[in-house]
Amino acid sequence: MERAGPFRQPALMKIGNAPGRFLEDVRDNLDQIEACHRFQSVDPDTMVDRGQAIRDKSQALVGLLLDADRLAAERSKAAEVRGRLQHGGWGDEWDAGPRPGGRGDGR
Image 1 (tube, one colour):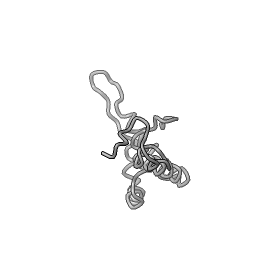
Image 2: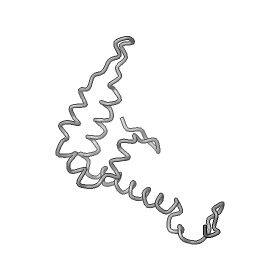
Image 3: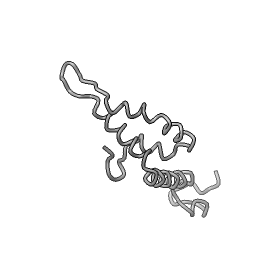
């Protein structure tokens, strides 16, 4: 299941940064991802189900890929974050001169 807040699953965050062609290819092969819904892995010593995380992630990924509005929102958020990171997290002020605590000496 997808977590709320800033601690989303890394796989879903990466989808927001994926090229459109990659997303088309993944959508074309959703049946392979859906097969992970049935993944079973039980530790024979403790009898603990180790496959639940894979089943949850595959369900979240398929849900995201099938929901065009949600996917567009994730891609928009990813583009915004990518833009902030490319400019040092300073938004539109990234080239406004020396930064507090930065070198600012032209090195």
